[in-house]
Amino acid sequence: MSATTGRSDEVVAGAIFRDGRLLLAQRVGPPELAGLWELPGGKAEPGESAEAALRRELREELGVEVAGAQRVGAGVPLAGGRVLRAYRVELVSGEPRPLEHAALCWVDADELERIDLVPNDRVWLPELRARLRD
Ligand SMILES: Nc1nc2c([nH]c(=O)n2[C@H]2C[C@H](O)[C@@H](COP(=O)(O)OP(=O)(O)OP(=O)(O)O)O2)c(=O)[nH]1
Image (cartoon, rainbow, N blue to C red):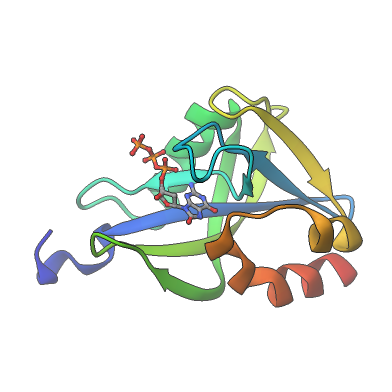
């Protein structure tokens, strides 16, 4: 993607909070990430906003409708030139189901500390923890 379209080279990851818990999803692959937990999401398409990418990815992966996109923490450069960014999103409708993940879970602040996160996602721990302890 060219520099003029900027933020389309993005992997968006959605943080959904409910009742003092954060939704995590367990990856099925690639082998080095299989079994680890992440914020559900995926690659934005060229020209797609982060909010639209989150709506599309979370519909595909969880079968839910979400709205909003409020940045959480720092961006993480990925191999291949993309940047991984986390966004808080609001659950509008539907109950999340693991349509493309091995499993889903809702964690509180203590469980978030102990769960095996995808290594890149650890950078967001302080902000995620703070939100869970609000
Ligand atoms: N979705 C997601 N991807 C993450 C997180 N942390 C992290 O390092 N990644 C990496 C793993 C992958 O290299 C990349 C996104 O991959 P993905 O498999 O979710 O993307 P996608 O849904 O668009 O999948 P595909 O079409 O390429 O199969 O970002 C995270 O919290 N959520």
